[in-house]
Each structure stands twice: as C-alpha cells, then as structure tokens.
Image (cartoon, rainbow, N blue to C red; front, side, top):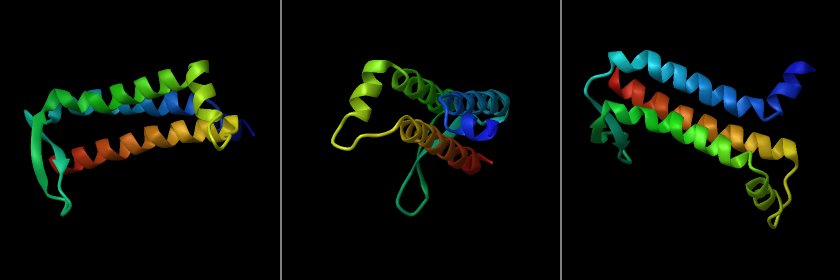
Length: 112
C-alpha cells in the first residue's frame, strides 16, 4: 500500500528528477567535449553540443515538477475540457519526467 501511495503522489516526479540529476553528475566527467543533441528521422546524429547541455534535461524536469505543483497551474491543467483527478495529474507529470529520462538515455547511449 505504501508503494501505491508513493507512485500516485507528487513525490515520484521529484525522485525521478533527482535520480536523473545524480546520474548526470556521475556520468558528466566521462563525457566527451561534444555530445549528440539531435537525431534525424533515421536515428542518425545530425547536431552536436557542448557537454554542459546534458544538464538541460534534469533542469527541465525540475522546472516541470516545480511549476506543475503550483496550485494555479494545477487548477488550469486539471479543469480544462476533460477533468483530471489528482492521481491522473501526478501520473501525467511523472510521465513527462520519464520521457525526459528516456531522451537523456538516448543521448548518453549515442555517446558510449
């Protein structure tokens, strides 16, 4: 029951963002100076960036989690044409964070 409460709470997106940041900090020294940041339709890298930009994804996760926790933003997102329950809203935010983790893993897998 505790696990279900944790999964359905606002704590999960914070944990996802925190773990993503920790992994990024650990892997950062091993990255080359240029990392792939964009892939074309055929899954071929077509743009490279400075390795500092790998921190944009965890930063974006924290921004999403922080602003979606604000009551006004939550009210606007849950009271649109289709009402969302708190659990559905939390899953939506967690899903966005997991999507960014998948993007980060894709970038890191192209490096190594």
